[in-house]
Image 1 (cartoon, helix red, strand yellow):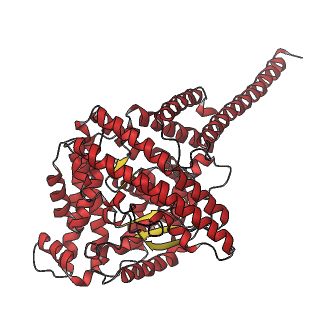
Image 2 (cartoon, rainbow, N blue to C red):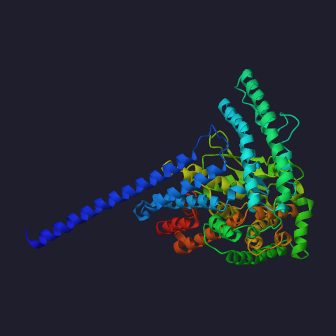
Image 3 (tube, one colour):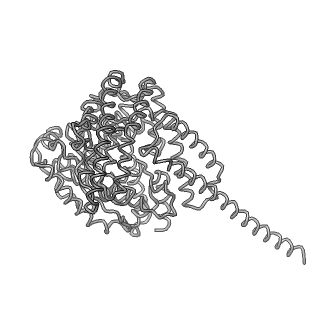
Length: 575
């Protein structure tokens, strides 16, 4: 064999060995990633018999932070470039989730389990669903039994928060007493948490129904009602007299760093508060011009402020009964359903219903919200419509609200996410990131215009006022938490620039005060999706297909905005 042939064969052998070594490294890294994911998912499925509502002890939060730190170090030992494409997404998403879990403990967020329209005790409302079987009823009884421990643990966390200066401001708790007093009822049968036992499945025999109802009555009387009495005592005697006066989170210990951390999490980006404030003002000015154009179209005689007053007070824009409001929401939902095949290649199997926000939480609740389907698969998703205080629920915003909360907004996106193939890790099928989910919801309000859902200038104005609402959030949220705005300044800014009712304005401002950064996700996410769509339309020209574009946005499930951009870039490269 001559020297040239020998060298050629030697190089060939080196190439083969390199490929084998590369495949081995890839397999090893993939195995390590799968091991970390499996450990994380198994750790999340802790003993539900002992803690059906979760373990909210301080010890568990500390242990979980340490566990996430260990998993993150294991992740960092993996060479992400060796992983297949979708495994790289799982790697980056798990890294993002683990970091947030660690930050949650670092900033002691668990010491502040309250929001203006929610909180640890209000979250129990979501556990109340129709009982489709004896097994479901027994599981729900276990939930009722766990409420006293759940409440005791959370009150202990609130006490720690008070002592550390980490609490909610007093101003957001106007009307909050209803969140616990409504559940301190004279009888078990009149209690909201007993209500699923009023309509047990017909196929259950009488003896089983009686047994379940007796057990539920005893638990509501001896566990649920006393627990809500404990909440009332703590709130009125300990929490409210000692909570903070300042509304901005920057006034709390490490508040400035915490707010930047929340911006990074909720927008999955690294904007500063000042950058977001500026973006918000620019969007407000742009949308305001479009609103003024509609005022000219309807030939309104008066200024913008007068037009908002007209929209807030004229009876033609409001339903006369809760049933009428729900009926119109359902009609809009069906019109949206009919348009989906024109805009989407893949539709979810999971259906959704339209129902009122439960009376127990309606007074402090937003105008509507999507409630995902239960994990058991026995209940649909629900688009909740708030029928409380009808003069604060304008009909002209209902099409935009329905598109956002039902389809093609949250139901479509979240149901598809839950229905991702089993090759996708469970943590991703359960994952929700606000920049992606809320950005998608706001984007679909524009898609509804392309679908022809807005049938009057006022409904188009309603879509704009919802977009303006989200733009104002960028200004107001950063104003409150970084620029030291007063609540009055925030209310005035929102009231002067949107057609939201004053009730909704006040409810929303309290929400932003209590939930720093979350409200930024909507507009930041939407702007990113719109920018990616413009990029795809320009790059592809006549080859751009809206169904394929939406498939690129949705096919991998919940993503950070950088990962979403990678998905769209791949679509542009191979439409």
